[in-house]
Length: 193
Ligand code: GAR
Image 1 (cartoon, helix red, strand yellow):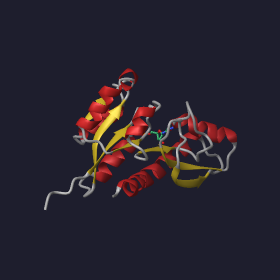
Image 2: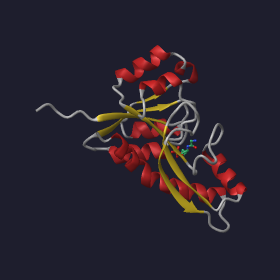
Image 3: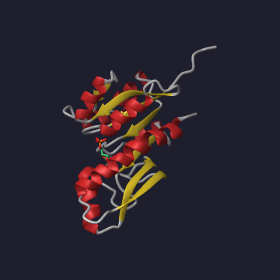
């Protein structure tokens, strides 16, 4: 019988990459899914070091390169990428790329969309906005990516209560725990044939 081919995912991250590393670790030795590529838009992103530690190929793709459809198509077909997981990725995904991977690009957002999303809403900016709003809860949202920031179909949300005296820093830590607990499982369920 021919060997079963795994679903090959690319993880996109712009910064630290704790979620990217968590995904890499979760899918190490997984029977069906492989994190086959890490993509960053920044040469100095810590995620590139994390990828190297796990021997996952990593590339920097600049916003200028994203405008070259042929270059991008070649890069992703060369690496046999079947789907994409955004984990703290700050560039808007171009329309042609969304068409290349219909329903196959996921994003995680550190709040309860549709609130506290959109351009400029990432990382600590989100947690500060949540605390400043006086909201009683926050959480995480995992959704399919479409042409607008933080917009496509929501496939998973988990809520937490904002505690008395909560700061944006304490909230960030609690949200990160939720992200690390849930994102790999949601990715696994979404991409398992
Ligand atoms: C994560 O909290 C992720 O939800 C957020 O960036 C952080 C990246 O952390 N993404 C967004 O805000 C997207 N709008 P990490 O680099 O440690 O994984």
